[in-house]
Length: 394
Image 1 (cartoon, rainbow, N blue to C red):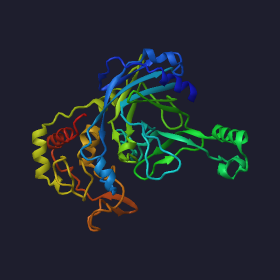
Image 2: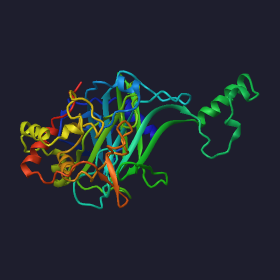
Image 3: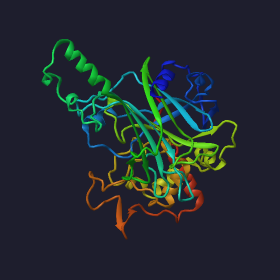
Image 4: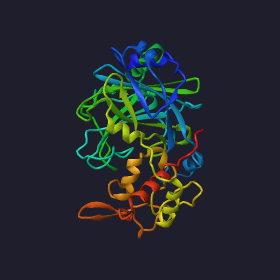
């Protein structure tokens, strides 16, 4: 299937004028693995915002990413009743491939996140890592060079340096060819997470998928095929998806990436899930100007850097792009129930007396004030203001 996906990508299917969309339509086809099926795809434009909640302790990375802007990605989807396929295209003038002999280079990559089967009613999981009782499934693909891995086959003859083989000429060429045939060029991983620090790679084969990415004409084209439903997620007529991309030339890795909010992928011909669509497309009915006043009056800037022009504040996560990759429902929940999702760790850059959370009865409890005492309109005003806090599109 990997070869088939590469064939699909090499076709360079032109995205017809991609439409900015609140949702994406997954076109019904007979087989999502048929390369010609992508000619029927409908592309939509999705904005990916710089993830900026935590300032990294990497001087070079921080300098490389200072003033990052949002990126546009063209996204299309297909489904065939059993599987769903997504194609993501984004501009990147540099092709960065992670090699096997360096620890300070980083690769370009992409990830697609799906909402898992939830034990709790409420908003969609938190972008990135999920939240307690609301898991996510994350499919990650990196651009890597060929790497030989023994993979348990115990063939020691191909695990030694070529200069120590004792062969020359054609024999050495044959040896190199054998090693190359065993090498892996694919870095694809699938994770499940239910909150920060819980992201776990699925290694038992229970998560089936196939991802691939190719670079041409200063553009990455990435594709993922996975079942519509499996042990981790059960799809209705709407599949919520979040998209992330990494830029290796800017030392991108982990939380240093561009990230979308949840986007509804509606399966053409099926009834959309009204609840999911409403959450992913909701526009707060509050007054942003009044919300900014309320943020100031309630001391939010005492712990958070909110606008990019504000001084960094290490007592709480930065909110400088929170309006781009957070839904209104998540922002509302964060104001009323700050312990629902907690960013990990005692901030290593802050004073030990100002942790982001405390441990109470074995559970992390946010140090943030519970603002449930605010009236409903004030909360909506704050949500409306926070939704405006996001970087410009490059």
